[in-house]
Length: 426
Length: 197
Figure 1 (tube, chains in turn orange, green):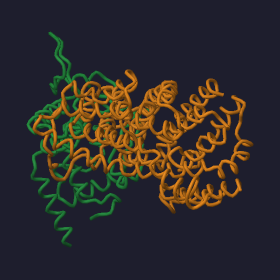
Figure 2 (cartoon, rainbow over the protein chains, first blue to last red):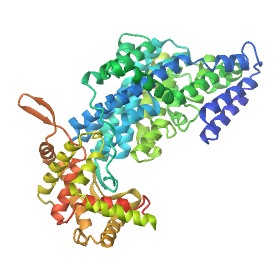
Figure 3 (tube, each protein chain N blue to C red):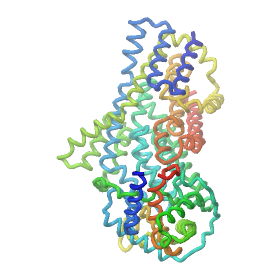
Figure 4 (tube, each protein chain N blue to C red):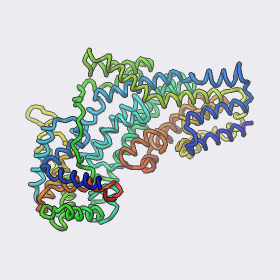
């Protein structure tokens, strides 16, 4: 039976890889198929309808709310000019030294990455940041990679991600936070090294381009003006509350929303701006929320007693228990989280993580180490992830070029994460 | 036929514009200047033009590489610092020369002047990247970002180096009009894949 489930999973991966099915739909179909072959009854305890669909769909509800609040805050950072002001100031102060500009944009991306993720995060930092870097001579692939590496450096402190791993792996938030603090230095070091090495290796380039002069004057949107300096602290507010003062995730994000609002908006305009950005945040959050519904359903399916019983012996046989082997094997498997592969945490990887925990193969916190380390790779180098596709295309290069340039760095981050996991939790 | 007429009219309208207008448009299209006061952009454009035109002529010491594929990539020339090289896109240069003939702009852009302008342009990028001129350009633009007592910090104005490079190319190559006019005309008449409209 376990082999049948693995074959179903392989078919699901093939459907996702070949783009025959959107990831969320493929995950739900996978879950239904796994539940059926595991012998789950249609209704009742551990059943297809009641357990997998009814209980699975809202299982990650807290994550969905966190994603929505992060998207709301992201929209506010954009609309109030906070993100744009940060990038503009960096270019004005450091524009003569491209590496300084790149490091500054990296810092902005890291801050943004702590608030929200995926393509909206890339857009927040990249819409001005990428062309600004290109304008000071940073090559296009390096510019796109800088945004992605920055967001990934912020990812260990992205509060919705904490909530996701806490809900999906059934771990308390302090445990997730504890590991993320250990992972962060690797992500930050890799991001800074990327900028320093790549700007030195590739130098600068300036092009006499046909696109440099628009045929007609640009229509000028109303000037937002620079956001005040104290408003620029907005991305740090949720972080300080959740990390420093151990406030829960939802109130921390809400505090960020309120801070952005009161530091940038006249009282008479607050209601209108709040509603507008909230509704816009819903649009941004729609895709990840659908994915989290599907992941919840898949997790419920792989945790069914029949599925655990069937998969446990197989997975146990191939999962290394020796710490050195653990690090080696999972480091070699890093490419499997690319191209929506089976170790993609926001895909089948979540199901595999569920199996590893449910079957008792690794402690949940070790699975957290695996999943978050793969997430650092996926978040930067996967040519099918929305933030990578958006950043590459906006910079005028291909996602594959960005993958080739960034993969060595994020692979090292994953190696660091696996090493910490093996040393601490195995 | 309609499209050719429209394009012809667009190019004629471009030729009627002042050279400084192209520089202002370049700045306005450069990120970080979204929504800036057009008067400030014009002031910076003038300053950058003056700075570039007044630069001493200098030979381009970077390796020169000639290649095609420029029309497809929308490029006329490119300077890279590692290794120091200037790439000249021969197909775009040829299209520019052909366009000059077609539009009767030879008085403004003599034969072979586009290639010479490209080399002069990229030479400015090279010296702005390596030499003390970048600080001088920043001072001449006068964009103050910080004042502490008698110390003043001048900010970087993205795109100003590009205007200076074009102004320098115009001055040292004896062009009648800015290379930015030719750039805009070429962009207006060519599709991204190099086919004429």
